Image (tube, rainbow, N blue to C red):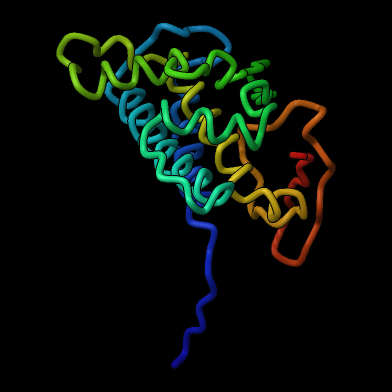
Length: 193
C-alpha cells in the first residue's frame, strides 16, 4: 500500500472549513458592523456551525463523563458546567474586525444561548424567521464551535497540536499560551485549565 493513514482531528478540520467559508464571506460583508445582515450564505454557515456544535458538545460530554447520555443543548449544559465551570465565560476574539465574543455567556440550565434559539427558529421555520440567520448569530455560532472544539481536543490544544492556525478566530489573553512552530506549520497553545 502506498498510503499510510493516521487518525485526524475531524472536528478541528470541520471548524477550519467553516471558518474558511466565513473568511471568504468577509470579502462581501464587513464584520465590524452589519450584525443584522442576512443571506442564504450566512444562513448556510449558521446552520452548519450550529449542527457541528451539537455533535461536538455531545462528544465533549462523553469525554468528560463516559456514562453521559445527554443528547440536547439543554442536557449538555449541566454536564459541561459541572466539569468546565468557566466554559460560558470563554472569550473569543476576531482581531481583524475588532470583535470580542462570548458565545456561551447566556447559557443557563434549560435556557440555550440566544443564537441557539434563533438557530432552531431558522432550522424549523425558515419561512418565518429567515432574518434570524444573520451575521451576529453566525459569528456567535462559529465562535461557540471554536470554544467547543478547543475543549473537546483540550490536550492537543494545550500542547499546540491543533494544526493549522485559525484565519480569523483567536482567544482572549487568559486562554492564549503562545505559539508553536513545527515542521508542519505554526499552531497556538491554549490555556484551558
